Amino acid sequence: MLEKIEDRLIVALDFDSAEKAVELVEKLDGVVSFFKVGMELQLAEGMHPVNYLISKGKKVFLDLKYFDVPQTVERAVRRAASLGVSFLTIHGNRKNVEAAVRGRGSANLKLLAVTVLTSLDAYDIQDLGFNCSVEELVIHRARKAAEEGCDGVIASGQEAKKIREVVGEKFLIVTPGIRPEGFPKQDQARAVTPREAALAGADYLVVGRYITTSPNPREAAELILEEMRQGFKTAQRA
Ligand code: C5P
Image 1: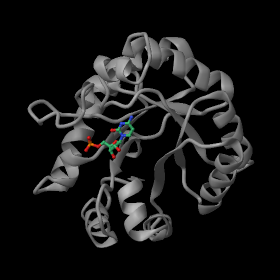
Image 2: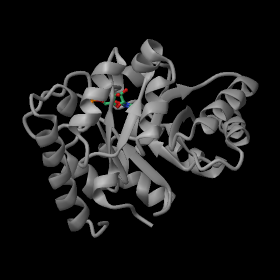
Image 3: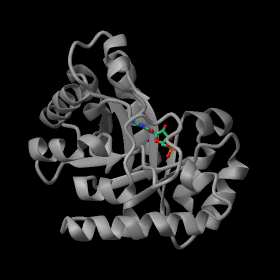
Image 4: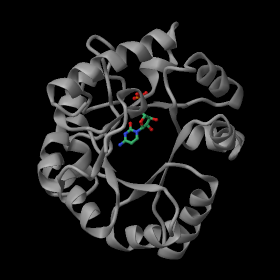
């Protein structure tokens, strides 16, 4: 069952200190309840931000993109699962996914495979040694992630529609690279607006800088939510 639209916006706490992260979480109280903790904040503060968010009743997306030998991945995922986080990113080759599924055990943790980073374009794909288009690689990875036991994928809104056709309704599509009209793309090569992402079939949207650097983060989050509402409603996925 789809969650309420307010619960489908995930704000990326890309900060170098817990103090800044907590300040934003407090400013967004009552508007946003799902937060992403990535490499920077984890390296700065260890697991304190994750424990803080959970103690405040917020949901946590731990975005560390695990990719290692199976035993290391299995053990790392087991640790993450024991913390009570809701989403965790991994890479999607078969052995990596199988190890993550073992590590997750019976925990209520959704394993999301990274398809192709939203910052990568055709040139980057060639540079990495793949002889196909971005879209072909995304679809291939999404299909495999679904077959191998992942709960969903991280994918750009540009490919969400095609992924949805391949993986069906229950598989989660979590979409970063969100840019409302007029906001600079920065390092995001395959950005879409919140409305476009919702229309294309994304389940959750991940937003960082549009909200974290806004002089009024609460207003910025409300604007994203309003666009999401329009998109999900039009797509009849509200
Ligand atoms: O600031 P911005 O909205 O571009 O932030 C997007 C967030 O989503 C960042 O925290 C980034 O690490 C994350 N992300 C991404 N593309 C992926 C996976 C995660 O942009 N494929």
